[in-house]
Length: 161
Image (cartoon, rainbow, N blue to C red; front, top):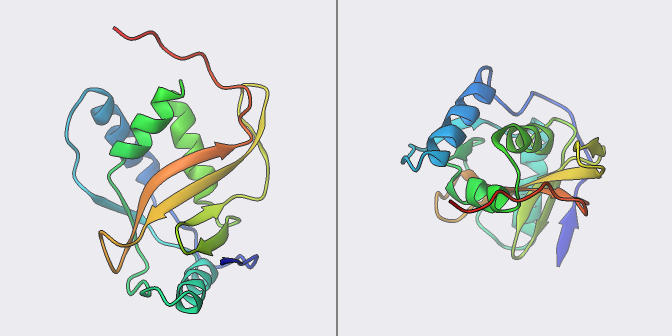
C-alpha cells in the first residue's frame, strides 16, 4: 500500500545555517572521520501532518517530534560511489528537503520528493528524493539517503586510489 500527499506549505524545512553544517559533515565523512548526529531542520507543517497521516493509515508509529536528523554516512557513501561530489550531494539534499517536496509513505519507505525537475549539470532533469529512516531514531526522522531520480547520465566515477 502506498499513500501520496500533494499538499505543501508552511515553514522551511532546513534550519538557518544548515547547508554549511551538512557540507562540513560530508567533508569529514570524505576524510574518513566519524560525525555526530545533528538536527538539520524539520518538515513543513503540511509535510509532517501528511507523513503522520500516512503512517497512521499503515498502522506504523507516528513521528512525535518534527525534526530531521542527519549523520550522512550511508548517504555520502551511496552518492559518492555514483560519482557525485559534495556540491552535487548538497544540491540534492536542498532540493529534496525543499518546502515544495511531496511526502510519500508506504510500508517499506518514507520519503519526500521535489516535484520540480532540476538540471543536475550532467544533462539530466532530476527530481530529488530524500529517504528517511524512521525506526532506529524513533520517534524522529533521520535523513538516510538522497536520490536524484532520473539521473540517466551520471558523473564520471572517480578512480579508486
